[in-house]
Image 1 (cartoon, rainbow, N blue to C red):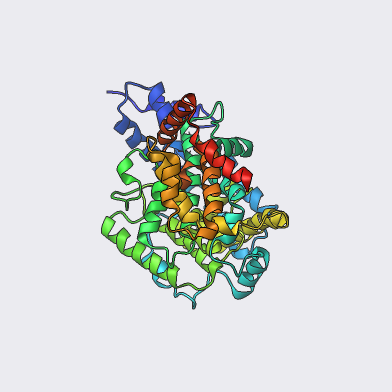
Image 2 (image 1 turned 60 degrees about the vertical axis):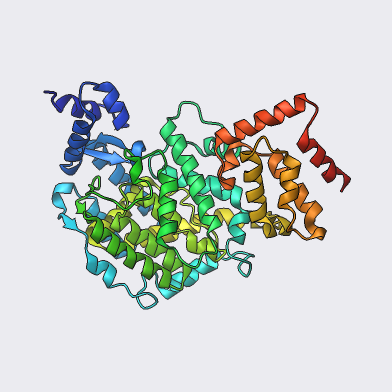
Length: 470
């Protein structure tokens, strides 16, 4: 019968930690479930620590974690973030060893006590401050206009920064190359690449639903599904309410364990979220109560970070990208909610993080080009037509386009035709999620296009002449 000692020694001798996959590769004679059980026991006992979520989770020596990460949290807060006395108390508590902190379960009173538009985690002066920081020139335009205007920058910043909080080691330049050009960074694991691409898909999904009246179960589940794709040990957990108990690494907090209780609490969380009138209070409420409930098997904090942006997208405010937020500081602030049901430390970090985000986006506002009104008006038609063309590679492209243009007024038809051709000409892997396409579908379509060129039948070139004549 294998012993757990060699595995524990492997983790304790790896300062940067090991993933489950790496542990199994080093100890192939130990069953996967056995390793998972031991890991859970060691985490609960404080013998090891964790960093990241899903398949990207790394198991680290507890000594290294307790002496560095929590120390870094204190340093991170003390320099850039102004902490209230309450926040300092929370930080001091969660910086203690696990053995010194009191085990606690989910406190339903914490959720029930919150009354939308009566209770407030963010005071009125603080909300005014946030509104002043986050206002843009697009405030009176349709929901999501500002976020779409900065889409390329937003996809990179939020995907990179949120993934970094989960231990992802992609650099910002790596993220640019992956999102804009479909190039995978050398020396990085497939898990890290998947995490970045999942964020991109989930952000695009959020933008597609920026005008939604409410954050409902369907949207929340699909945000989680997009973030979790190919990252969970059990793919059935993607976009599904948690069916089992979970342990929180480096915490004495024990979330709800039964699906019925989780479902009931989630209904209340969503109902209260949707009743809140102020977008920043909505945003922060999501940051507090979604991770606290832990409705999914994993990737709860990522889901909350994206859900927290939905009210900001909808109000055409600057997004919250989490740029330069230290992972240790974020973890400590979240532990304050888990173990003490206190939000002051997370609130102080939220305000600092939002100010940091707005500094980036206020600087580029003057350079923003006005969105093409025609592209905005026919956005759905363009997406549907591009998807139809690619998914029917044997069909004649121009005929598919002409059929799609039938409901378009004659005055706009030539211009929309040109936009469609432009979208088809610049298709690459980094934009496929926008159209609901898979890389394999793009490859198959391009193969047909190349064969048509060999037969002197370049269908897209014919359409390009239309643009030139204009």
